[in-house]
Structure formats: C-alpha cells, structure tokens
Amino acid sequence: MMNPATSSASGTSRDQARFWFARLRADDCTAQERRAFDTWIAAAPEHAEAYARVQRFWNDLNALAPQPKMSEWRAEAARSTAPTNFRFPMTWRRGALLAAGAAACLALGVRLAPRNAATPDTPEYTTQAGEQRELVLADGSHLKLNTDTSIRVRIDVQKRDVELVRGEVLFDVTHEAERPFHVRMGAITVTDLGTSFNIHRSAEDTQVTLISGRAEVTRDGGAGAVELVPGDQLISAANVWRKLSVTNLAAVTDWSSGHLIFRATPLADVVARVNRYGPGRLVIADAQLASMEVSGDFRIGNTDALVRALQSAFPVRAETSPDGETKLYARR
Image (cartoon, rainbow, N blue to C red; front, side, top):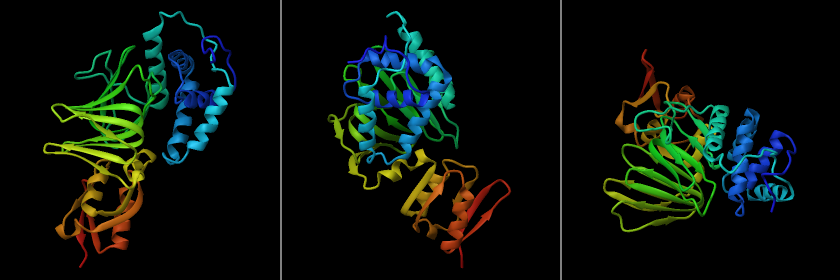
C-alpha cells in the first residue's frame, strides 16, 4: 500500500484531483490516506477547484451508469502514488481538517454561516431561495445543497454527523466503517453504508431516496431500522412511514444538474416545485388546471420558458402582475 505521508507530488492538479476522487471511494482507502487528502486540498486553492471540477463531471453522468469509468480511475490510482509531499506531525489533526474544509468551501462558493444553534464546532451551511451550492467535507464526502437549505455539520475523530434543518441535499458519502456517517432530521436518522442518497425535508414530510449503495433509516420510537437499496424511497410524515420504489431516479436528482424533469406530472406539483426556486411565483387560478399532466425538461430559474411552453402546448392563459406573480387560467 502507498505511503501518502512520504510520497512526492506528481501530475497536474486535475490528475491529482482525479486520483483523490477515485482513491477516497475505494474500499481499502485508509485513514492515513484521508489525512493526506486533507493536507493536499488545503495546500492550494487550485486543488479544491480541480477537485470540484472532477466532482461536477462525475455528477453530470448518470449516477448508476459510470462504474466502468470509476473502475478505470481506481486502477490508475492503484498504480500511482498519493499526490502530496507534505509532512505533518501526528498532532496536526483538527487544524488541518478545518483548513481543508475551509479551502474547499471557498473554492466552491459555499457560504459558511454559523448562526442560531450552530457553534464553531458545528458550522451551519446555508443557501438562499434559488441558490445551489457544492460542499466537500473534511472526510472527502461531497454534498450538494439545493435551494433554501440549511445543514449543520460535526466531524471529529469519532463521528460524522450532519443535521438537515430544512431543504434538500444530495449526498455522496465517503464510507468509513469505523466512523459512521449520520444524517439527522428531527426524529429521523439516516446511517450511511457506502452510499449516495438524496434527502428532501419540507414542512409536510421528509423523503429519503437511495441512489446507490446501502443505507439504514430509523425513527425515534419506531419499530426498527429500515434498510434501503438503490431505487427505494422512504417517506416520513406525521402519520406516514412507508417505503416505495422510484422508477425514475433522474427525476429525484434532476435539480443537481440545474434542471427540473417532469413526466406526466400534475400541474399543481409542477408549480409547487418551480416556486421553490423563484424569482416570481406561479399561481393556479383555475382549479381545473391543477390535475393537468405536464411533461418536459426545464432549466431552474427560467420560469418564463415554462409559462411560454404551457401557453403553447396547453389551453392555458397566463397573466403576470407587476410584483412578478403569474396566474395561470384555463383558456376558453
């Protein structure tokens, strides 16, 4: 096995980022290698930028399709040496971890916003309405935050905990058997077992959708853990606790690529999703339109294009007020 602490720098920042992206997802990746990654990403802003570009490339691929490419990258990583020549005493630990996280956040444009219940040990990461942000945690896990989202993160030598206060996050978790990754939403806890999953927490319910790997979901006072496999979605609400199968995972994670995908979706649901992003607001003025099924692929934030498509393809008439609200009427 390679020695990350003593090997020399090699390749471009892009090559190094690709090495680490593959290595951190390997089953035999060691804690020493993860510390070496923390050192590397904190060493220069271009490292975090290169790592983010690799992640964006990977996210643009179908989540369930690119295994041959990952296998190729892992094979290349196995033939290489870790791209860092930094030496740190064993006591550097937390300072380096925080520096790595800060460097990654700055490069990716994620805003650190400690407030409310957050502390220096549990920073809060937020997005405003219409914003999306990517975040690389100190352990190499990748998170993408959707619009109007807030999370609190606590990572130390013993545990990795994320609290989803509100909103939606797509998780690509670096698996560590000795240090489980937990996501908590009130009474609900998701435990990673080597996983990519999407969680949406709203005032009405919480939806956990597994993209790849395995995960367990528990609820305080519940009947035990529910294990999810790819394509499973668990829905929890006041009087609901059920698991169902999702046939179109792309429609769950479409937002992460900047699009919203609808397939025979009731207009009421389309409007609800679009209104999460703004600007402006859609209102169904005629109740008979609510159940009308809509299909299409729309870029987030381009509400005008959606309204034009509705008026072109359906018996819909739109009126926009000076304050930006658009009412949808049945055209007669």
